[in-house]
Length: 242
Image 1: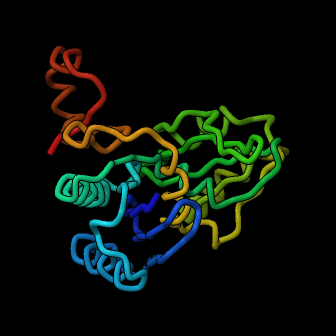
Image 2 (image 1 turned 180 degrees about the vertical axis):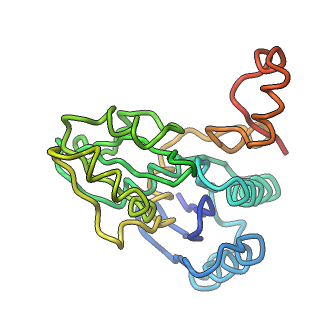
């Protein structure tokens, strides 16, 4: 199966072409966050490098969230457009799982990828390796960093992500005496190759219904719901279709 993988969920941009588990071409950059300008040229470049044509791929795999609102919208919109126009399968994968996939660990280690969500909050999840497969054991969530640390007390933990450094002081205090480590810096950059391998065996989704997984609403929406509490009960978790 030939796959185009796209991750614009945070500051880094990463795209890759794979054939099953084999990497054909990959382009990853952390220099700019202007993904609306750089994404399509990056995709065109890896098609050129691999000598594949867009119509030759079988599916598009995209980092579905959580992450940057703008980044997720750009990645998901591009993935949906390509999947629809080329009549290809579309699959979404957790952005946090992509980070976790880049770290090998024993079966006892809880991998905790972290994205800064501001105001001492994070997007985080828990993953473990089980017989060569990455398993999600703590659902992706939007949570305060202090509450996250309480959830993982007593476990052998490996934190992953460039944003972990922002919580260094809290980490020393909240995880004092706990068995934890921080993954090497090279593991903090998500790779579209890992995204593609995670999306290889997942069931294809409906292109029209596919939406980002923001895991939280915007500040403006939060304020509106405070003023209109009854309206909030009519709706489930925030998603936006386009």
